Image 1 (cartoon, rainbow, N blue to C red):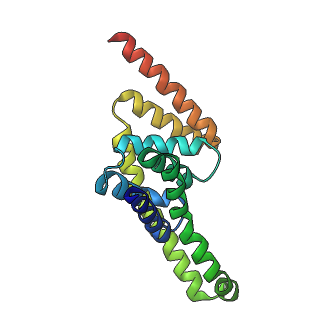
Image 2 (spheres, rainbow, N blue to C red):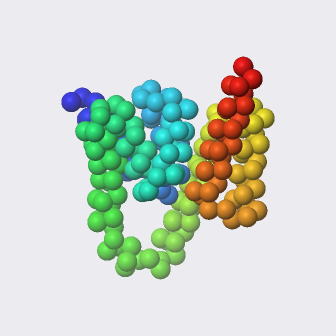
Length: 180
């Protein structure tokens, strides 16, 4: 029972203090799940996030589902997701009227612009951490460069880019293990 309370509390806090969606949640996930609670390794978290990218639904919810399930089975998955989405439901319900009324306010627009910039910095730092953890050799650097080229140069769909990365990772892994 304690783990279910911990899962709900942890993901409620993430849902409450994360602005900007799944990508913005990465720094909190990394700190809470990997560093503070050791519920997953950095590699496992990256795997959950990658799978969350390629499956239907919201990345953060998918990731919460994986972590919750690992910790406490299906009940853990449900509790983690409920903890994650509860703050959004509460905050949106409370603020929707006020935002509708003041959405053209210079103060509100300025605050939201500042939040977007801060979230961009958080995402950037998380990408650097993830790249350091994920890129371990020349093959990884090649896959990263190709994925970046596909996205920036050809506006490749995310799913295609992820599948290309998975395919190349599989080929490189087979090649490395075949030579061992």
